Image (cartoon, rainbow, N blue to C red):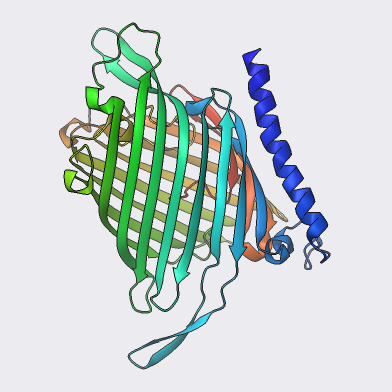
Amino acid sequence: MRSTVYTRKIFCLVFFTFICVALHAQHNKKQISTKDSLDGAFDVSDYLIDANGFIPIPIIITEPAIGGFGGGVAPVFIKKQTPYIDSINGKRVITPVAPSITGGLAFYTVNNTWLAGAFRSGTIIKSRIKYLAFGAYGNINMSFYRTLPDVGEKEFAFNMKTIPVLLQATKRIGFSHWYAGLKYLFLKTDVEYTGNHMLPPDFVTQKEYSSIVSQLGAVVELDNRDNTFTPNKGFKVHFDAIRSDNIFGSDYDFWHLNYYMYAYKTISKKLVGGWRVDGQQSFGDQPFYLKPYIDMRGVPTARYQGNADLLTELEARWDFYKRWSIMLYGGTGKAFDEWKDFGSSTLVYSYGTGFRYLMARKFGLRMGVDVAFSNSDWAYYIVFGSNWLK
């Protein structure tokens, strides 16, 4: 009975998405083709360009950590920005500007997890500053795992009612692809233990049941990928160091570091390779739900946690027939509390395959499905663009 109720709620979200599409189509007087002008194949490039800045995006949730299935909608408003002439020390360069994006987000999953929020990204052109703002309210039902002496791995279920707010601004350095700036995270979270055991686990402290995290730190980034959706070449390198402290209104004092690199290489006309390295580390008194964890396809969110983690992935995309591609990928990683424990910590592995279709040639956007397997789990994912999204 409960699964029927969940299915109805998800269906209502998806149905609402298609109603938005239909209403928008009725109000759009310009006839928009869904066939590419070059090869005549199905393509949504012209719709994205000419749909008066509004795109109702349906969402399918496949994350195993929050139920394995869900649906939602993200109405997105896009405003084109014209290139501008940048001038530094007498040198003038025509610089393209990414479109301003404003949108909402709402989803629901079969384990009664739901979230609603809004976001905005854009560029302050005169200052050459890219910015991002995100806020939401969520009811998250999620399990965390710990290895206990003489017992082994045990699952502990929690409900978390949370209000996240993320603000980020980075300034372009000269004419380069380097950016530097600040990042701020606010997180108000109320936690309830919902597991089968009578007593809550001892790894949760009393203040973690209702607390505030307030973090501020620096961001440095290099990004020269040929497109942000499904890159064929280039790389992105990122580092941020964020401090949670009482002076920012936080209930916790700790540092959180995150560093990652995505590299793409066109090996041949139809073969593109990708390499990812990602690591995180926390120092101090952080809440259990913010500890670093292994984030790879096929591995449930927060299944393998520690004070630090390090992982690497390889993937290959073979464009074997017209707009169709086959994906192969695999990776390994470890989560651990101290670097001296790296050798003895559990080796987490992930591998799988999938397919892509070139949905929007003018944006380099591909979409498809991945199926991935790991140590003791498997999952499927609806992929919009790329799996590497940070």
